[in-house]
Amino acid sequence: MSAPNPSELPYVDTKPQGSADFYYATNATFRFLIGRLGREGWVRYLEELGRGYFSPVNDRWRAGGLPAVARYWRAFFDAEPGARVEVQALSDRVEVRVHECPAIKHLRAGGREIVGEFCQHCYHLGTARTEAAGLTMRLHGDNGSCRHTYATAAAVLPPQDMNDIAEARS
Amino acid sequence: MIGCYDFCGHYEWTFGWLERAGGHALVREYWNEAINHDSQRHARDLIRNEGIPGMLKYWGHTLLEESPDLGFNISHREDVFRIDFHDCPSRGFLLRNGLKNYRDYCDHCMGWTGPMLREAGYVIDHEHNHLGQCWWEVRPASGTGGQAAPGAVAGAKDVRLRPDWPKDPALLDRYCKANDPDAKLGGTRKE
Image (cartoon, each protein chain N blue to C red):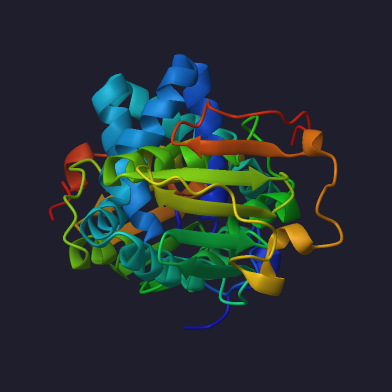
């Protein structure tokens, strides 16, 4: 683990990493939203979170392009306990290879029932954020390990196949 | 991905979103159902089973993770469990980063711990100043004890002994033998 570079994160804490038990709250929040507002309400929440709360990141991505995207994800996962992630910057895209998702790992370790749609949150949130930044996002997920792609229009990525995002299992 | 490093930021944002989507009732239900009964069920089980020793285990662990530089103090006697926050890690994160999407973030603590402690047979005395300082005293609901005098339980670490603790009660949100986030007494200071 290396300490996150705070200059790359929009909101900065005094400690180098977050508390993994907060993943329980994120999972519970998704369950509550899907139960009360339906899947459409949950997606709307994620999209508005992506455009609103994350707007400082989106602005940096828009201004700094793919190098800013790569720097952000390196700093982001340095601050998440238990993450094993590689970030590769290419000419037309950034590939974030999540070998071990820290959230799925902690939810399993804690014996929590993982919301089936959990992995899809990265796609809905990421798409809202990249659209605001003039970029494109795709996700190929596999229930605890996945690959995020953040790309410019030049990459001409095929449309997202939602079947490529596996359902999370406890 | 939604991370845990800046959890308090998107947690606070979520309160505001929920209130716009479903009103105050939906925020209350979120705190009770999603946080008390789901996310923090380990706390709920521990405290229902063990009482004050369970509170010591739960808050001793979770606050050390959230605030390793010890911006808090835990103290207890046989009939009361007390926490003094001198630098709340959660509210402090919001203040340092200038985040505000909900009218009173501090309400979330009573929002989930109030129902949790009611189910375990306890009531809460509490005051907060919206600036990252607050105190909590938890007693059995069947007991007769009132709020402890400043320093009586926590000694010199009682937050009410700070020179900057408001002398004007109107600057504090206050709860007396409460379990409901809306049972707030007094207080005119807003975040």
